[in-house]
Length: 386
Ligand code: NZQ
Ligand code: ZN
Image (cartoon, rainbow, N blue to C red; front, side, top):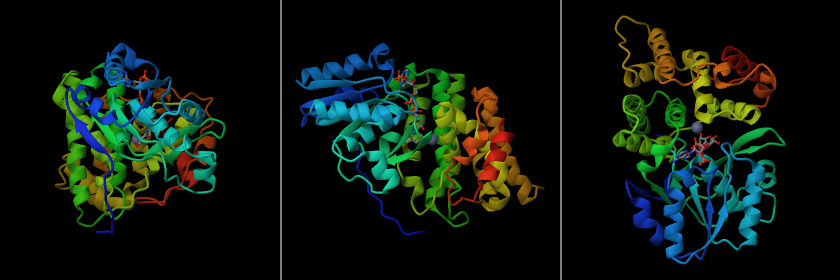
């Protein structure tokens, strides 16, 4: 196994009623709490009333930072940081999904940093090491953002959507019941995002060595597939939602990456597609994954074959390695159709006015899990995904 260091800064509280039970105690050391949220779903489903009730009972000064959009922008980060400074916020409470949590992670950095954080991170490659403390209440699962310090931010001016380093949550409260009001399409695209994180990690290097991370990963992938199917049959299945919520955190909390080098090339492509089109993240990944994997599986036959047999149950009997590996990729494509996610860019809502050549040219090229991409090959992938 590759050398590694593992430590975990986020304390997770999981289950029905966890906000009511723990939020007061967790925020007790702070006076001025920034309550950050998105477009208002928390006002419709009762979460806002529950959280503000707890904070009011504790005598907190609450500063609201609302309107954080899906695919949060750098401009929104700056708005939040300015507000945090003006109101002397000493704790940020992010209530939402990946978008709200990610935005807050960078607000937490910018609020205590005089330099422009984008210039510092992206141009000077100088990473922040001090932050306002923050915690998260997760209302929609999929990204696993609550358990890592990465934040995906869209810089509208530069047309770049990319990962930045931000604050880690001191705590994360995960009540699967909170996800019941999430639009079902978002539930499924979020769960697919989790599957994507697992796959992108699984195909990272090394590929053909005995590796505990990959064994755990296979269990997560099988669980996500099975629980998406359960939810399709019974959308309010609490157990299935619980499993998906924990799988989401597990897929992005670093455990699956232990001893591995991962590059998330499909994410790099989807992020730039998002920068140009503002598409839904999980749905964008669903369109790109099979096409991308058809380009790389022959360079990673050992792992793609294992993916086919261990995750999709492909019977290898009488088939060549290449046939088994290809069958795994096609099983993934069939699954995406089965669960109703888009399979083409058109279905995703990307019309002909989008300059796919420019999107492809702007993608980050990762070192490559099985095969290193070129911008020309990424351009072909976008064309084939049309
Ligand atoms: O904004 P509101 O009104 O809250 O509505 C949201 C939003 O429209 C809604 N929603 C959330 N909880 C709800 C709810 N609606 C009803 N009931 C609830 N309980 O769901 C919509 C999507 O929310 P969003 O936070 O955008 O979704 P998600 O968690 O999928 O986050 C996507 C963002 O995370 C980034 C993505 O690129 C994208 O920007 N990612 C972050 C990662 C990370 N930090 O580790 C990794 C991922 O690969 C990903 O890139
Ligand atoms: Zn993702």
